[in-house]
Image (cartoon, rainbow, N blue to C red; front, side, top):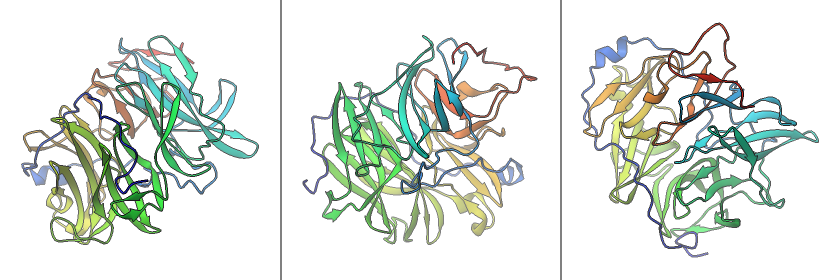
Length: 387
């Protein structure tokens, strides 16, 4: 392999994903501090499940996968337990494609072990089917499938060697694996749960150059950019300590990466765009006591509204929206965490906000708890016919 990463193909044109511009602290701090919100929902580590743990779990207590059809109906796609003749023990993070197709994985118990399998579902046609992966590849952790606009599927595997793969028109290719050299450094391990992608040529993820030296990477057009490395200086005079999951988008045709990080000076949100890394938001600017400020390592949400990020002050959670003009405002104050407008007045069950995937048309997929029959949705019609 070359020092520039995976073998490059011509970068295909993809649909731009609008994201926010620079930050200007315009939030009324007192209003944030006074707001009492529930504790954060359960979240996984930034690197995702440890592939060394047999049947590593992707979620904690979210036993049902839901999606919305074009009509606005909420559809139940899968659940933990006996599903389609399979002993499902866990559900992975879903992804909604541009056409509304939902890609997801389930952890299946078999012979005292758990392995993961990828499925696709069409909430409108009430159809679900498995995606066949060669038997030589196994997944002992959530593969986090991501569909690209050109019809490819990007996902991670753990065996025989952990790596990031692409399945396109029946052809399987490896995009990144340990032992590969990037910018003169050897990749020792990949944080499989950290992957975000636009297509096979544009990936963002966390990898480890040394056994314990994590790095935030952007692979674009055959080139590899190291955005941040634990222990090395930040753009604002501190040092990176722990890196959060990257969120990747295209802005004017160029990749943009947003990620959180714990540094020697506290928790910050960083923005890599136009070839430059800068601090977008400092958590201590939102909290009178800097030591009480916190930004979790989960991936932020990027959409036409801007950048949606969870934060906390003195143990109280806050959902912050950074608008494209840089204004910062308090987002949805409900118990579900950061929510997309399409998901307002959600139905009668809990939701794991960090699992939510929403496409441009407003169709969503998300993990949650069982429905409570005593309550009725005020916006979405429920549809129990799709099992």
